[in-house]
Image (tube, rainbow, N blue to C red; front, side, top):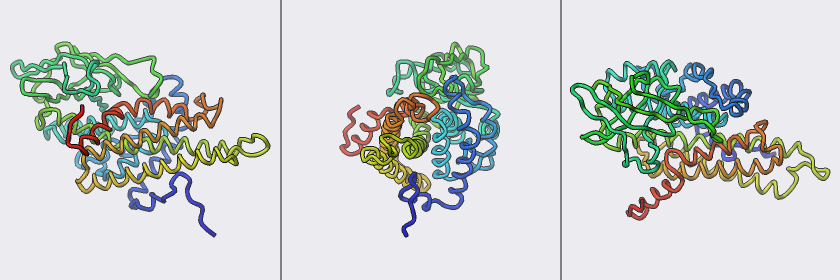
Length: 389
């Protein structure tokens, strides 16, 4: 008799993982099941980030997971980091966003572009969840055109004076430090700015209908003075922040897989139990066609991200490949979340079920760190050699 396949992993992608990778996935999955899922619907309702989970996330080694152990990090490979993102987003995109910003947008630039003194000062405390970071790149007028940056830093003796504003900043009101990108007379440069510095202000964004269990902020810099030792010395120009975004986008290709799996599992259970016209909803051809389409698209996304992870770990990953996976997997997940919401009927509009929460969150995930259109154009540029931006 044929063995029944895992409905959330039809191609047995899990068998392609190493023992260590499976252990990482199982550990994070258990944390999500036990600690995240029981509270996350209420957090979303209340517009509250579950900050009580930060220490547990840190204790599991999930912050800066791919960075070296000498800085207090776990030294995992890229695929393991992807699996962390997948399982956290199965819980909620807001929780994955927190870990993604801390790891890929704050710890990574300190490691890749910072001085050894900066690495030793910040990375161990960030890995332990004692210092939270945010990433200041996007500006109110900027969006997909980061080169049009108005925030500037002027040299004044041995210091830098920063003026400007940033918008849509995850973790802004939680953060102890901000990685701030600013125009200088020598091109765009990055600075590690303690958030208690005089002239720095963070204002939380309210009235959100997406990522409600995440902190989103605007940052303001009014003659914020930092020493030259706060500057990230090993990078200049847009390649600095864009390099960080490539790291974060890689994790984002995995995250929506988890959100889609959560939605599919929910409707698989629901359609078995929901009786209409004297038979389970799952017995309808229309429902089975929809479920099959979801499984097909999840499978494609799993294989895409796994190969991307293998390329990353081999040092061969290219930004265009990340764009293709981010575009495909975010579109896959948001379509599935919306379809699942529809299958759940009236019940699907409440946070008693996860589909509406994931659908709303994915409205942000498909937009931030490169909109779908931008990533399509990145692929188009690769194919044609012509920049259509």
